[in-house]
Length: 451
Ligand SMILES: Cc1cc2nc3c(=O)[nH]c(=O)nc-3n(C[C@H](O)[C@H](O)[C@H](O)COP(=O)(O)O)c2cc1C
Image 1 (cartoon, rainbow, N blue to C red):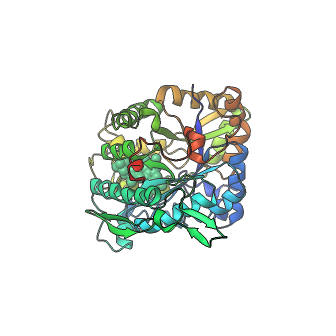
Image 2 (tube, protein in one colour; image 1 turned 90 degrees about the vertical axis):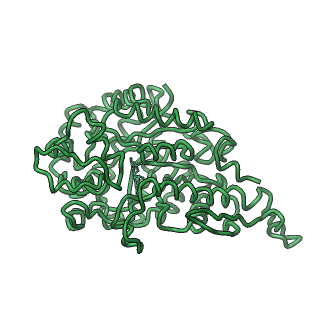
Image 3 (tube, protein in one colour; image 1 turned 60 degrees about the vertical axis):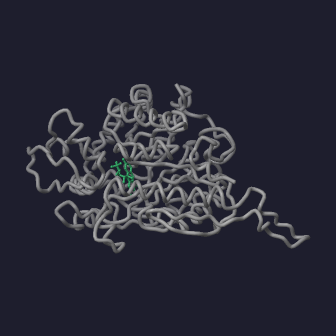
């Protein structure tokens, strides 16, 4: 079995995925506004040799449930939410190898500015930055940004394709590798003949300009994507190097993983050019009993109300309008189509609100993996063998306790079994994961924009 990739899943807010956990007496996520919180988190992740921290983000607020933002404001469910890019410099400063996969939405900001922000972070992290490309799914964000409503689902991906083309031109093509000379004797910083303006004139974007940053170690950051509709998969297969999926079981992951790898192979990049990460919540103890006691303790803090509000926004379905035993029948919305399909089109039989609530053990839809370190390692190994995933995004429960527990208890067992690396390798994030030089391979569409 290949070694797993493991990321700690975080967000610059109090309540991320497992809602209500912040009310646990040992949880420290109320300190998310302090750099100390982030520095400690990063140091723990690197102590455990984790591949990186994956930072989610959302533009907008969850107001589908009960037609109001009040439930999530009261519960601190992804609101307030601070900028995910800001803590990265500090985390990079106290670590050497840890990667950072950061979510930035393409719909609301010009590509020219994002190109510079990500290049800057690639410089400051010495090539450890990854970008999770998302296009948004909230009308509340669209309204906040001056639009009447969210652009249509597939059109968001079409626009993102163009957005990426501009970024690839800037990152890969604007400055040649030997453009920067820094020649003090001749007083020549850079050779203007090796720096060029890139141009784009498309359906969604028009621009002309020289990239504001000089080439960074990776040039294009490691590309993550999360979004598993058919259109989302096509997009991922063309562009992404790591795809983040959320399925309840390994068996449910398998067809998505197979489709993604098949599409990546068909695009000419090769199935191995794309790694798939599953979302899991782990509650581990030194013994099975300790783990289940911990689960019971955490469980008392779970917020079903916040979880429903989050899930309503993800699917675009207001669950407050359903009785406990009503089947959820809405077939399509303009929000997250893969999340909705999982409980409608792809469900073996109609799912009811009661069934959804029953799943919300720790304030999310994820059934946690609970047990001793050995049992957790078995279950993760089964996700790889049965689901075909290449690794995991670990959702936090009680922060930072859940990360510390994983690092102290589960990581050594995975290492003993050869399922997880004993140490980091040198080089930029892409090189650590895929070998090579740290730059995108020539089979990636971005390579076409190199000089
Ligand atoms: C596991 C997972 C994680 C996601 N994380 C984010 C996120 O942090 N921010 C965001 O705006 N969208 C996030 N999304 C939403 C997707 O980027 C996308 O907008 C949404 O899934 C709709 O695409 P789809 O219909 O192709 O699934 C996530 C989706 C999935 C499945």
